[in-house]
Image 1 (cartoon, helix red, strand yellow):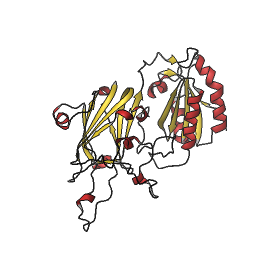
Image 2: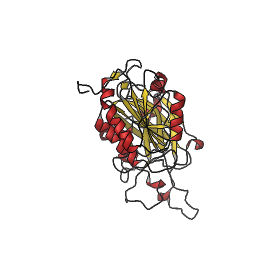
Image 3: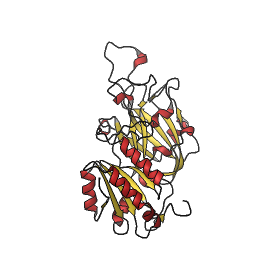
Image 4: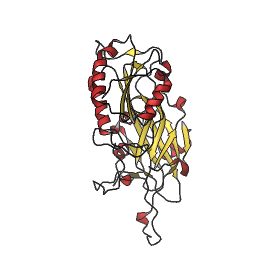
Length: 332
């Protein structure tokens, strides 16, 4: 139980991130009325939730710590950021007590130790991710418009495209028995190619894509059943931005991609996840994204995907230096 720590330098903040598994940061300014309004509530949360070297609350004055505000893309005040193991997990913008309570509930659901680079949660908790977040960016997969998702060449009789954005840990990584008979991954159908059309509910800036692929161990020599062919991980993907609808396979082959990414065996971590950084300047105002899985990493006929996560920023871009007050009397 402790009051929030006032951060006086980037070095001090870096040290706090290393010493405490969970850090909640309040980015504020002395001139910000909404910041002052919610400060007592934030202090109450700190007093009730803080745990030494486990959960730490801090306050960061954006006027004296402009470099930190810029590093973590703080563009509105107040902004609350939840860090886990030094990486950004979630942001809440504005003097929003309910939003801050929700952030703390996420924290409560995530205080049990887990493997590096991953988190597991129940319904309403933090989404599982197979790799750490790039510093300063958050998981924005929640802004995917799941109603508009379309996946071409998937085995639609057994797989649902929405499972790619399931918040839960992939069943292939679970040590215990699966809780459901439903398969929580997708596979291609007639060949190794897939075309995933993903619309967003708001304009986003994409920094990184995390793909998780967990094909089972290769079949033994005694298993000659073609129906049990081991699927592959994606090897080459092409990305196309701001399309009104999905592409056809011939079209995706012929037109120039926004970015083409080759995924090597060394890119997949122990969680079966590849962290794929994007050419950020090309992904600044994105309303939709098409992911074209061109081929797999072997000689099979199927490619498997378990999870997709989008890392970046959502909402309108605001210039640094013109920080806005949120949650004032206007009801923002």
